[in-house]
Image 1 (cartoon, rainbow, N blue to C red):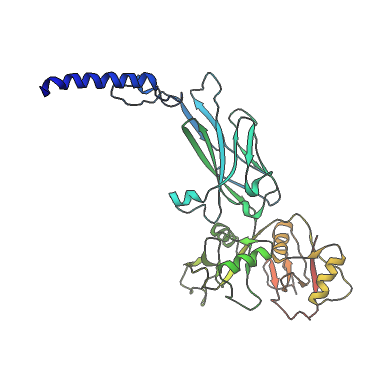
Image 2: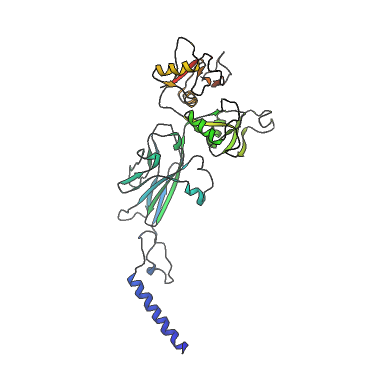
Length: 370
């Protein structure tokens, strides 16, 4: 009896499936895949030959702080569709200190939305709100324009173009032109944990340098035999001339690394990164030398404020500030910038000379920022 019922049950099941299919049509996004009913008879979905391509002619873009920059992103179809398609674009960002870490589901969480756009509608987020837009210079142009570049804008940007269920993306790295400088506490060397190092750089109009920024500074000649925090939580220092006490004479020039350190417990100096400043850093022409309090007041009376260390370094490296006069800075240090080395102005190499942190009652000049 059971053997007779089996064909009948199979026939009933087939009719139910057919009825269900007529009531609930299979989803078709009209893009990569055709309806399942048009497959090969085995229920497989197949590719219909239309491809979405997203690309960028530049993998990295360099710009200056306060300027505008364009991160290129272009898309097209192969073959081109006969009718325009509705696409959505999303730009997201991974900060510089995490942009080169291995990609993982956890790393993806760190992506921050910059903006989304569909048709003429677009929306920006967070610190990018009101500073970003799409260029749209031609069909398929989804390049991102960022205005008023900030120190923290560096990192990896992802342009993702979405059509139905399909999406393709490309990344562009944004770098700022600037200068790396060592920073340490008034108490002396190795007094800063990671978070104090972050704050110390921020106080001097700078950010903790990334590995790439420190490496570039080393290539340009930075030699410093004290270890400092970087933005990724590692502790390193650059050596161009190997010597005892700095890794030894047998090690080749390069970045010496202590690796990842405990961000609360361990204490080092910091390597800060400063980009160009919008204003002007200058040595104040004053009839007398000044103590620290008098120096800050003199800048204020001149319509300015006492310059920060990062501002002085940026003015020296990026604007050619050259002055053989020692002056107070906002952190209580005394320094002066030299482009063309000469007699009675320190070592034979260009650089920012430092007197450290002298007692506040001593008399020097002052560097102001307006």
